[in-house]
Image (cartoon, rainbow, N blue to C red; front, side):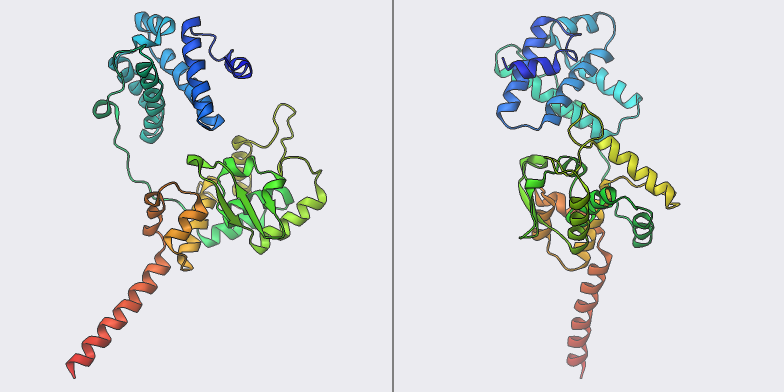
Length: 318
């Protein structure tokens, strides 16, 4: 057993029996060998503990002692509790998917004879939510109130390079090639590696930050000793702080800057194939969500096509 992993999750798994802890840690070790992200491993632990916590009475005790006794009814109860707590259907589906992966592992190991997660029963319908870019006026107001070099740079990485919040947090100095003007993102979401490019305003902010910061491993080290770099919660707080300072009442998350990046590129004529690579999407079906947003490009292409159609019809009518 991987001792560092055991120590890392020992406290979180203390509520389970020793056999359950053994099962979970073996599964986490398997995920680690498959290069699953650390956040995925942590999510497995929190989801399994949440499953136990949501159940009451005899079922609570049964799963505390032996997770192989989990039934479809237990999963249904977990989903009902998650819905009551206000979790979005997509979030619940993600958690149920993590549970399905764990129980499938136990089944393949011969520790379970059944899969308690049933696709037709436990899969929730999720609404199609369009990406939410920031309008130009709100974007300008937001950046106008950011005076801190570090904060301006980290938000520019999302807006100009399309980085996810987690990618910005863990960005290292050696990932940046200043001569080539590129940033290499290794093992992004879905284990997709990609190269993104530094826009002029990002390069300028980067040089200022480089001159004023203590160079270590990470571009954005955490001010807290127990953390190596900034975390999502810190950046979310900064976003809310600057939105309030700009007088913007509409809520935006940091991820909206990534949506804005994609929409701006499509409106500038970048193809979906190129955008897919820049965004680090595993499938182009994810990129296709943005096609309903780039009104400027759609309108221009429609007008071009209509001009050709009307011209042909006019010629034929002569």
